[in-house]
Structure formats: structure tokens, C-alpha cells
Length: 213
Image (cartoon, rainbow, N blue to C red):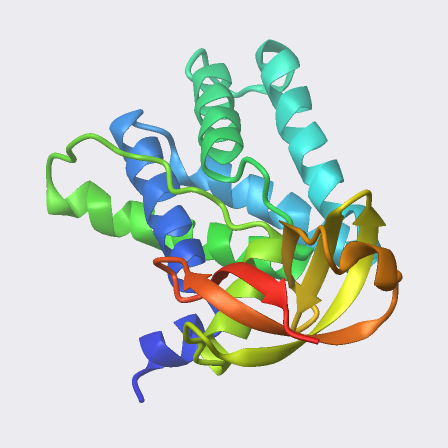
């Protein structure tokens, strides 16, 4: 395994795309990579102090840089650099729910990639990737570890019963709400039941189920 593979194996494909998008955006904006490096240094320090709120402190820090760029900047371009970094991070990391260490890895690679893209030549349109929520990641893991099929019987937990609608939870992550006019009254929250899979989504997860008990 190469050094690059060793360093990136802990990043998901989506996180890797985010790092590329941030780097490409900042290079197109002709942003000084050293200014991104300073922002990364701030985040690293925040992680060392208290990682629980390091992410929120980092994004607030970027807003502060933009607001006070003229006072703390070294040149007239510095405020533009701050503004570009803030926008790139806001656009590409919107909804980011990973821990601060992961954010630090993403930005660290974005910094390295900026140097690569600067030498690589013109960059086309940059499309910000959709950031996966923690729940999306959990569902993806569940789908990856189980192969679902139509007519398959699986175990599910009842998480809610409202009228004739029952919400089932499969593998602790996949939730489906179905109409169960004949079964709803006999089911209760917290109960474990068997459900039959009636349809499958394109991603391989159950789309529709019914109580099989």
C-alpha cells in the first residue's frame, strides 16, 4: 500500500470528493494556500483544546476572518482569500456532521490538492458534493452488510404506532412507515416483529414492507 493510500484509507469517497471540490474552488479563486493553512492550524488547535465543539468554532472563526479581514489582513487581497475560504467550506461542507478529526483530514488534503491543481492547469466547473449525514452513512453501512430481496422475511422493531400507520426499524437504522389496518391495533412501540419485504429501492434497501406475523 502506498503512502497516499495509507493516508486516505480513512476518508470515504464522499469526503475525498469534498477535499477535491474545496481545492479546485480555491485555486479557481486564486486563493493563497497559506491562508487555508492558517485556518487549518486554528482547527487543529481547537481540536486539541476541545474537539466536541471544534467544528462550530472553526466555522465561526472563518466568519470572523471575513468580517475583520481589513484589520488583520496583510494585503488588500487577504479579505478576498478569507471570503473564498469561508464560501468554499460553507458550500462544500454544508450539513457536515463528521467529527473534527475528519474535518481536519479533509481540509489537510484540500491544502495539498491546491498545490496539485495549481500546477495542473485550468479547472472546469466545480460541483460541490452532497455531504452525507451521519444517518445516511449508517444506512449505507447497513445496506452494505445485508442483501435484501423481495419476499424476504426480516426482523424489525416497532418504533411508532399512529392510527393504522406503523413505523418499523430494520437493522437499527432503516425506518419505514406503512399502513397496517389489520395489524396496527395489535402492535405496540418497542415490540419486535417479522416483516415481509414487498419492494426494494435502487440502493438495495427495503422500500415497502408489511407485518408478516
